[in-house]
Length: 265
Ligand code: PGA
Image (cartoon, rainbow, N blue to C red; front, side, top):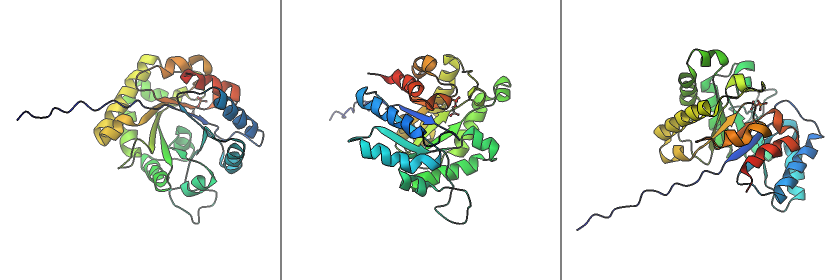
């Protein structure tokens, strides 16, 4: 009897994600920008998921406005951080469940600004990612080296340590996104070369595949750090770059749509 030879598994194309991180920016007029983005996406279909992560104060009203005015809302919403607990005596914090209740489908965890401003460790980030999963949210887990670490040749060591420590066991492609954001590229107008981005993203892909198997081969790996309409196409074309995490250029619909246009079809 001849042994059945199974065909190699079909490579499922990874649907990219372009997520806008508004950080601590945006008041009520930001709702106009979100609507403008949503309306543009209704006309110009792109081959990517598109998300805005506004400050928590805007999340619920933004979700209501986007849902009320659209038959099939294409703009997703995310939070920028969450507490590890579901609820309780944690003044000023917001839980993953609260974000989900407000209309988010994802939450950014471990952004370098939180790692620095709030002394968040890899372990804390891992707990937050697990909290996101508990609440049914995708966790967008940020990693990235500082300028000094890059100069010292430590980029892959740092990113590897952050990945190992910040991602929870059992993460799936559907609920986990990794964002590679070199700290020195955030808000500076500087970006790594496509070759440098390719090196780090290939390294991340390898680490995800080694730890999560098939799920790891399908997880989205975003690049973040000074992504603009002018450089988006080039950066998004790099192997293993499955979208972008966009800060400054996500605040204005025109700029953000210019980045999203990298995935125009
Ligand atoms: P930037 O920020 O696009 O303004 O550099 C990116 C980020 O911090 O997510």
